[in-house]
Length: 131
Length: 131
DNA sequence: GCTTGATCCTGTAGTGACTACAGGAGGTAT
DNA sequence: ATACCTCCTGTAGTCACTACAGGATCAAGC
Image 1: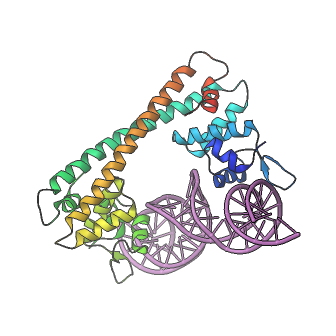
Image 2 (image 1 turned 120 degrees about the vertical axis):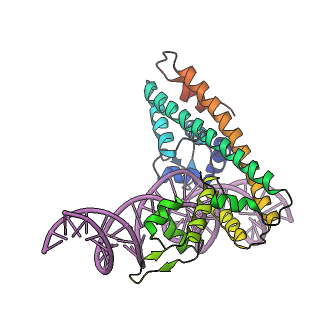
Image 3 (image 1 turned 135 degrees about the vertical axis):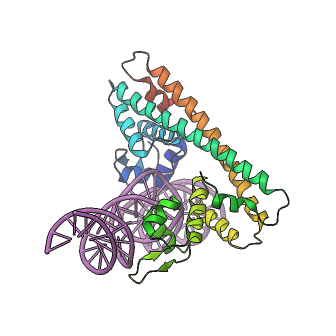
């Protein structure tokens, strides 16, 4: 049974965010000590840690929450989890592709710009260029 | 001189967002017709279009705004624009790298999970795994 | 016993960058 | 005249936190 500060360190979720998850009902309310301080079990930490990882993987909180809920049932619906994960992989792939295009565009802009021009053609080009 | 709906179509910035930019002082207040409707010039559209492109490139609004301001001076400070752009390229590269790691992780999870397991080991693994 | 400083509590407000109304006025086509 | 569309202002909601304010409690050193 550990306090919120230590729970934060072990799970990687900030103290404020832990309390936020509790307020939002994303994690169950933990036990309390006589002095009203929250007390966390290893299970609680596990839940927070899973949430952290899912959020880091870019799942929106609502989806992370669903997956957490799914994981609570022992005979959990693997299919449902898979569906969410697969959809998310597609999202991520799209994002990577977009960012790569973006990176190329930015590099081009910068290299064009660095030719000793007075008038920074970079912004002018962005302003008038078609997509 | 065109109305906000057409300005939105031409610049790619939504009507609500155009008004938001005006409220926030990011673009100058446009002229008004006798009936109080906003009227946009080609210049105004240019500004909105530049903003749109910078935002699409992932610049935070504050930076996009700075770059827009820089572009308003004819002898604009190319160096300053370059600095912003270069810093941003580094950010983008980092983001791409992170997303790629994420994609790999997700794919691994899904492929492990699809082996006819009842207990969806995916979430269990995420829950206990170390980074 | 007392002080200092860390940790915790609740509750509220702020962030970024929009987005979505509500409620009304003005314009256009039949 | 009747619809229906576009526009207006102003306010509130979104997501996922984050940052206080103002106070209580605890652990360690003197």
